[in-house]
Length: 329
Image (cartoon, rainbow, N blue to C red; front, side, top):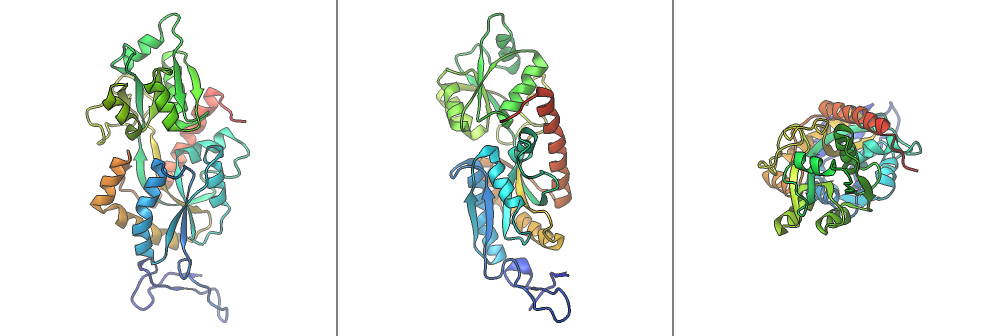
């Protein structure tokens, strides 16, 4: 039985230790955090917005838990490598995944992913929502999404759009737009968001869905225009920019997310304690402010709501990918 009772007046996640009591006469084993460390696996590269978000919460969580919390970047295969690693890790609270929308999408694109977004993980806590914004080259005669669609629909139009890869969220968002409007654009995939955005700013590609922080410098320089955001409501990051829905296009209300996932089988008492620590960290104004600067919207959630979100995202993106016939070999 997993014992999370207070020991010496201090709680497990406050930096003290409890004990695993398995049976009478059985030697107790060390708590997950006692004398060890917690690793947050990030599928993004070092220096990416997801990596920065993980490192932002790692230090205060280390103080909450009384052990080092380190970030381990395991990139590649559309996020599958990092997610599969955590899914197969011991369910002892020592290894967590910064779960994001790509981790949900990847198994729908690759049958060999090696994990299931729903059954392979125990949701701990959602950290943020991650809307995307539609950016276009400033040389296009389009100041609204409708004007952009009208331009792309003109006879002989051969516009191209960029993304960080086949089956990525930016790619799928443009697929949704093309399916809804009947326009046809050429997909030009890159190995990350920065080069995908740079090609639009340079005028070699017409459009891209990307984070606000990636698009803003190019919009400020006059090389790009930011036309709309995804999500069901305007983002507090860009309250003056309309949503895709306000612009007349639906299907963009499901936005990206980021949160901590533990391997399936992690004791629920432990994930609940970890979730409480995460919510304590997220309540700090400086943490929320920095997340907004990274282009993320901090959320006040709970484990049940986070689990429901992952199930809903899994169903939504599975349908989008299936309907579009997208596969990654």
